[in-house]
Length: 354
Image (cartoon, rainbow, N blue to C red; front, side, top):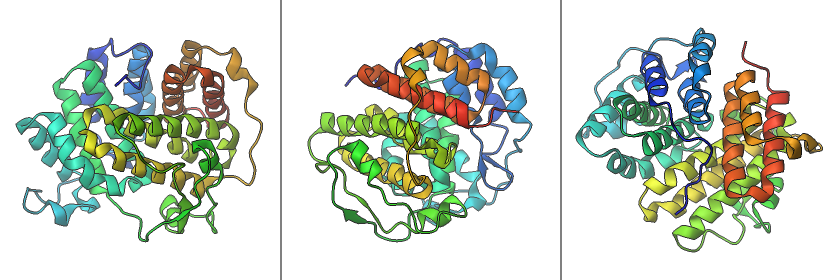
């Protein structure tokens, strides 16, 4: 299977590892519920050749972060089910996973826990699965260093602590012709107010995946690539609905795509189904009344220039959306102009890092 990412690769292991060590003294959330995006953003910055910005970026972003919360109780192989989805264990779950990856190869731990955590893919607005995607990419491309293994433990632990399954079955609506049409057919929630959980809780039906989730492993990879490609394009025309939250309609399925090569192939179809639910759920929660014209400037922008603009802008969501757009441009170069336009739209509409 071909890599789903491109660009520079991780040529600055020391910078990323030092940043992760610094961040592992901070909690996964701040101000009560906001997700700590720093591990994800610094991984993207380093991977795209922007390691020189990392320390300054962390100084600016880190002012908002909080220390790790206190422990609540030790999690074991016997009691983990009772602790799943219990945010009082935000500090305990990373310890549990650190013990697991200290005992076994990290891919084995991932394969065991992925199907347990996947039903809660929308937990914390999909941030935990996105963090796992960045952690896996760093391990695969940069080596199994102690800080990167610890980051996987933190990411899986965050997902386990915030694990939440949507409360009702979602009925399938007729399947459109392709992923882009499916995203456009997602119905908006009746009450688009309040937080993400309030919005997601209203979803009762979503379009079925075009053509069904059939075929072998290569088909699963193709399904995910199509979803990420079209979710990035969808962002270019619909980001004004909520330029921050709609980022996750693309970055969440892209996180699954990044993890896919390190999962047993029998987990690929269910992973695609969960990625579609997550992406469509975010679109349903935040879609605007009507699309807007997509930026024409994308056709005149190069990959390095685009990521440099995102890094200078500094907002973590803009960085991650551009990171995903560059993935799309690598495996679907015929859509690069549209993907770059989506990245420019994020830089335009999202407030820069203070």
